[in-house]
Every structure is written in structure tokens, then in C-alpha cells.
Length: 148
Image (cartoon, rainbow, N blue to C red):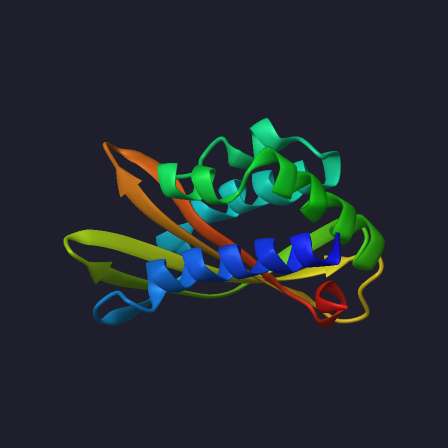
């Protein structure tokens, strides 16, 4: 199970890296610029607590749906429950926008509280827009307890 979580962790990091690092110039955004991100991120976080893959993945891009399967999601849920506990709250930290090949990515960072985590868990989510719909391009959770 530990290897499955590490593999999922690497996949999530890779998707986020592709979406944000390999993009062009980056511009800082305000919380108001990315107000759509709060509810979408909240939906994913709550879905992890509930173990609801359909809810978790409903706004994923096709690439992310392929990368994060229902099986890997179950491993993620178990790991979160055991290592950082239940989600309690989140606070906006920063946001940026970047562009690659005419595709615009908005990356948002939150600091979140979890019941078993002494410090904040940093949540980084990346989004794009296709045909008027906001899509999740990646989500990453940073906590020393998740790597144990």
C-alpha cells in the first residue's frame, strides 16, 4: 500500500508539474481572480473524506482521469484517514496564471487544517478551461505525514 501511495503521489506531482512548470510566463493572481477554485477544491477535499471517487473526479480533465484511477483514489483516502485525518478548513495562500501552447493554467495554493496534522497541509490545485468549463489539471497535497 505504501508503494501505491508513493506512485499516486508521483503521478499527482507529475500532472501538476506538467501543468505549471512547463508553461510560459507566470503572472500572480488574487483570490478574487480564482474564486471558482475554492468550491472545486473543496469538492475534491470533501470527496476524499467521503471516499467518493465520482465526486472527486467529476471536474477532472481527461488526462487527470486517466492518471488517478478509482483504485488509486481508494489508496489515497485510506492514507489520508490514517496519516492526516479529516479535513477541517482551508485558507487561500496564493495563485498564479501561466500559458502553454495557447492553454491557460491557473494554479491555486491553500493551507488546510486536518484533524491529525499538527501543521498546515499545503494543497496546490491547477485548473484550465475548455469549452467554457473549468477542469482540474492536477491536485497535490504537501504534508510530511503523508510521506511516512
